[in-house]
Every structure is written in structure tokens, then in C-alpha cells.
Length: 370
View 1 (cartoon, rainbow, N blue to C red):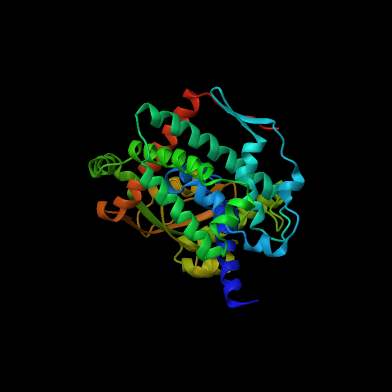
View 2: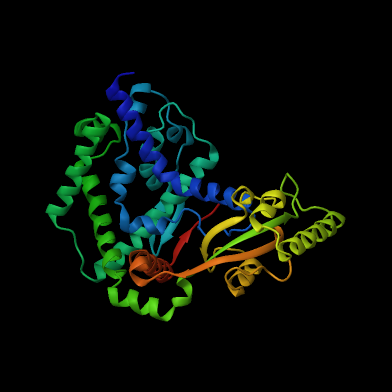
């Protein structure tokens, strides 16, 4: 394979993988949390709402490479699925059909070259794309009420960027691109215009001022208190992740109580954790580093935040994972400048979510699940 083709393959794989990264991160984080036996999984499933302000669908969905599929000359999973004219979603009186979805899906299938996507992967793509289409539609409808528009120059610039990307990354000309998917420049620019207007409205409506961020910080300082703790876990799950018997659970409790006495009698906590703890933190002496409220399971969090630095829990703490012996080792308050940008993003995302929930209700969005 030539260096040029290797580069194209890498770019194409990166773009497809980016689309699925959120799902993979959630799976990895869930597994990590199970290993640590304490952390909550706070991430939501792939959130299409966030895409609306950060990406233009034309670039993400239409503008993903073609050279792999083109070189392989293989049969597309998209074409073998035979999308129909069936209505899969409605936004008010607007009907979205499988054929509408197909226009967004085919390039995503095409980039996979010879790879046959699983039914689960295809379903994830389809659900995300359907959500994207309905999200764009409600934002566009509301934007038009505010008389927002996209100029010819803006649309032309987006179109030019798209075609230049195709040429540079995927060695396909504008003519080949349009021919491959039976599109015209006008078709693409029409979609780009709608998406630009939708993105403008989203950005305009969900901006967060420095004053809003400071007001939130001042009123919710408790959110920015972080505790550092170590623990020793006696797990109430077997090697397959299933709950142990009541008899074994009783023995585990007795064992945890014995270890607690050793810790309270001056035993080195880190050494005890390394010897007895049954989770991933054992090798670090039970250290869980700093965490904020809402990151740990409730029984653990309640005790950890109530302890004084250097103090060990008076009793063992039971959670869904087992029995914990907890030692609080430190605490700190994140100052405003440290959390400002992260908090601004969080508040903006909250505004986005609320806005889209309200618009979905206003325009009676209905996604038909089979």
C-alpha cells in the first residue's frame, strides 16, 4: 500500500471512529467503574444534541471519504438493506422517511470499505442520524422565526471547505463526489444552509456569559469541593460479577470488620489495602484520588465527605459493590478560575439540552421506534 493510500485510510478511519467514540468511551468507563467497584457512570449515551452546535452534518455525514469503498468496489451494506419510503420520524407536519435517512447513511457505510458492519453498529448510526435530522429541523424552524439566515458567502465557503477536504484527504474530485451519490451542488448547499442556520440559532441561544458562570459558582460552591479518599473493598460479587450468597456475604462482613479494627488500631492503611482490597485501587494502597459530589455511589460519598482529613470511618460502609473501609486523606476547593471554562461548557450544554427538549415538545417530534 502506498504512503498516500495509508494516509487516506488513516483519515477515513479516524472520522468514522470519531462518530462512535462516545459509545466506546461509555463502555470503557463502565468497565473501569466496575473494576474500581465504587465510581458511578455519569456519562450519558451518545448525545446527538451536542453535535448540533459543533458540527455541520454535511461535513460529518456527506463529507466522509470514499476512496476505500471506491477502490474495493464492493457491495454496500446500505444498498443491500433496501431503505424504503417508510416514515421513521415526524417534526410537526414534516415527515422523515428511510430514504431521507439513506442519504446520510450511505457515505458512512461506504467509508467502511470491505468491512461489514454489525446490526448493532448500523442501528447506532441510524438512531444518531435520525436524531440529528430531527434536531436540525427544529432548530432551523425556530431560527427562521428569528429571521436568522446564512449568506451566500457562508454557504459557498462551507461547500468549498467540504470539497477541498474531499480532494486533500480522500483523493476524490468534486465531480466524482457528486456523481457517486447522485447529488448536485445545489442539493448539498441546500442542506448546508439549513445546518448553518440551525447551528447559528443553537449557538446564539445557548451562550453563557462570565457573569452567569460566576453567579452559578458563588451559589453552588459545595459542588466544587473535592475529597481525596482511600478505601478497602471486600467485594460482594464473584469473579463473574454476580452477587455472592447470603452466607458468603455474612463472612465478607465479618472479614471487613476485622480489617477495620486493624486500621483503627494503627495499622498502615495503604498496606492493608494492598493486602485485602478486592478492586483496582488495591495496588495504589486503596487511593481513589480526588472526586467531587456525584461521582461515587451514595453510601460511600456520604461517609467520605463527612469524615475529617486523616479520619477512618467508624463502621464499615455497605454499597452495591460490597463492604468499604474508608479513610479520608485530603480535601480541596477548586477556585473559580480553575473551573470557569469547564463550568461555562457545562452550563452551555445544559442550555442546549433544555432548548432541544423544549423545541422537540413544541414541534411535536416523534421518532418511530420499531
